[in-house]
Length: 125
Image 1 (spheres, rainbow, N blue to C red):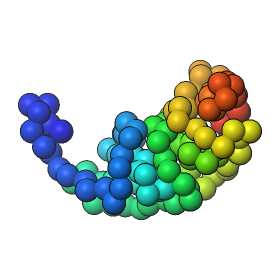
Image 2: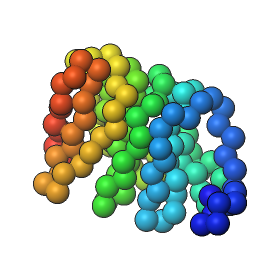
Image 3: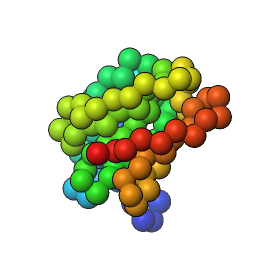
Image 4: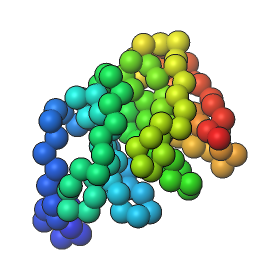
């Protein structure tokens, strides 16, 4: 959306989008979708890549200073992806449902909560 509220470019998702998007320094827009994929969108709306998590993606992505994209899948896994869409690492949760979005602290600790109300902390490196 442009600053004046007009549409800059559209992206028609194959399923619902229930998270906010993240924008990397290079302008790439990352958004999760109910089709189970994280999408990397170029300016103009073209899909650079789609990374399948295997389940709904209702968590909002987080892009850190190094460009790593952190996203939680609905099935209870936290993923770290490289800017090219390859997986850097993943970590499963105790709970099978994740709706929350990851938060990154200054010391590189990644925090996220699961459906049971537990707050989990991971070293994001």
